Amino acid sequence: MRITGYRTLTTVQDWGRPVGDANGVIPDGLVRIPIVVVETDEGLTGVGLGPHVEIEAVFAAIEGEDPRCVTALYDRMLRRMFKAGHSGAVFGTIGAFDSALWDIKAQAAGEPLWRLLGGRDRRVPAYASGLDIALTDEELVAVYQIYADHGLRAAKIKGGLDVDRDRHRLGLVRDVLTDAGGGARPGLMLDVNETWTRKQAVRYVAELERTFDLTWVEEPVRRWDVEGHAAVGRGIRASVATGENLTGLEQHRPLMAAGAVDVVQTAGVWGITHFLRVAALAHAHDLPVSPIGTSPIGLLHGATSVPNHLVSELQDLRPAVGVSLDLHVEDGAYVLGDSPGLGVRLDEETIAASSHLLPHPAAGGTHIRPEHAGRRLYAVEAGEESPVLNAGV
Image (cartoon, rainbow, N blue to C red):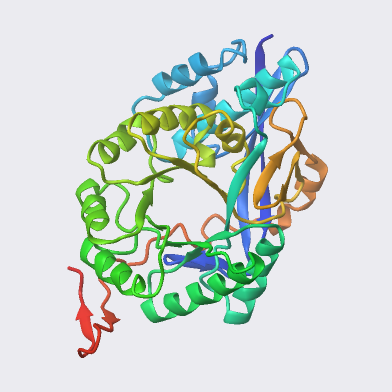
């Protein structure tokens, strides 16, 4: 079998409501989802979700090769793009091809990828993640009630801009999940998407921990700040989670070596081989891993085969337009199906017909860092003392 070509598609995740985080909001909830389809001379095709940046140059590393040689081809792509491929969107293009190759390999074997990778249990524990910073109280409760109805008992909300509002919103979500769980204490996480300085992070989380026992705080400082993550970890009770924006083992390794991360995350678009290698490195440091993403389908398959998977992010319960996935959600877990490969099927006519929904590439949203991020003043109640202002700089 040989790789003969590829084609690219772009569909849309239609949330049907505003989505966002501390960096920005997408009012119409329309998010671009790029897709790569790899073609072979035997008619098998594989699907990968990820960017198309420098795609012709990346494809040159695998054209004419046997797609079943996945890990060797992954390293071949990294070598071909070694000056640009270990970071950013180009790493995502490599990840998209990698996922597509794993899809082909498992289809050729007639197995779902989770079983080919050595997984035994098709159930992958999940937590709810609504990208919810723009929602009203009523909308927030309604959204997490739907997650709770699917058995989810842990949730991550977006925040980091207003400690009083975050305290209130965490309480609303806690109550929804507690009621659904018959009084059992739910897991609560806060994701601030790199919006704090070290001092802000410690002061802010310490204030929330007066009320909540947070499971983790995600990306409290800039992704590369090893000392900062370590300082935050020493100053709070909650675990520190980070890694979704890190690419390559060389970016994860310093955080693990310094004891600066408690929950190691990887993004769905970075590919399956990357996830498996990061999971092995984390396991060597006795750390759990947790996949992140709108549709982390490849990483869900990979999660079944690693010993240190903790829980995977579940965002929208519906797949992107024109995409179907052989999985469902019940009792708080993804349940993977038996379709050979990843179990991803594309309706390319539907995707083409939805092109008018695609947001303009220059549209604002969560991918643009605000000008004054990390340089805000926060009012924090300090017990019975007067409110103090934490500049964090």
